Amino acid sequence: MLTEKRILIIDDEERMADSLKSLFEAEGYLADVAYCGSEGLAKIQQSAYDVVITDIRMDDCDGYEVMRFVKENCEDTLVIAITGYVSTDSVIRAIRQSAFDYIPKPYEFDALRDSVERAFAQVEARRMRDDLISMLTHDIKAPLSTIIGYAQMSLEGEGGGLHSRTREFLELITISGQRILSLVENFLTTCRVAAGRLEIAQMPVDVAEVIADLRPICELEARKRGVEMTIRIEPGDTTVLGDGHLLFRALGNLFHNAIKYAGENGRVEAVLRLVERADESGPGRWTVFEISNTGPGIEPEARERIFGRFERLAQMSGAEGAGLGLYVVHCTVQAHRGKIEVESQPNELTVFRVYLPLAEQEKATLNAER
Image (cartoon, rainbow, N blue to C red; front, side, top):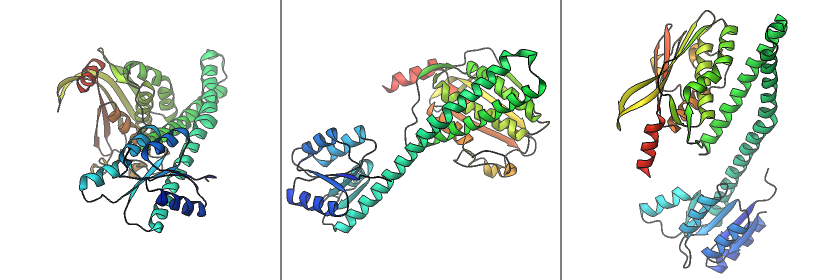
């Protein structure tokens, strides 16, 4: 719960600004005033405000400039615009793009107060989300990674010296820990997507190396579930431009899904290769990761929605998972300017294909856009 609710009121009509300050202070808010746009910008740079209420038409620095500055520099601050100039669609669109809300003049204080209350409800929700993200990152993810690391070191370091039951326990710790870590990572990625904060590191990433890093844990999970799995990497350039951590998580989600839905005595096949493929921008070279599994398959009507948040297959409703794995795959592939395809024959075979543009091709595209 917010203990202090800070508002900045920017209006070059001093009596109006002072009146609003008094009214909001009577409602329990900490209100500050600025009598012109430039003074408002100075105060925003000096202090942190949860909500800024600004008039649009001011002489020295108008409300649009205030909104632009807040949008670019204060991502946790919401702006409510007050204006008597909402007669054109372009003005309304401009305000809607940068402001949480706009109140046309003349207005009743109750309308403005309701807007402010809604803004603070959103501010509170954002802070709760950020606190949860911080907790997951520092209080769960870090110690969990340590547990997984020590379990893997014990498995690798002792060779054949481990008792079979001890080895089995360590393998279960590793698999279960990786699944919890994957759920945490998927949730964190989903939160970043929802907040518009999914940042992609534009670095060369060899997808073959990503798969090599995934192979041990995926083979272990497949063996524990009684699934036959083969992984094949064909010769050729598989370097893309992007974020290795996100690609590791996305491809890991596809591996886990395939193994899970294949079921005991099922089969999973994964292959990485280079292909020539034309799209709307012309011919190009793509790294393709294809993974197939036997199992229940996906009904045609479900294929359009499997990449949504919290979507899971009805055929396997009892399977574990939060329904975020394929959503994270889809968002990651889109962020890398890639494409994803799915084919499925119910009760026979399901195939996912991820197309990622080669690094050389992506660099040329990015340079052309600059």
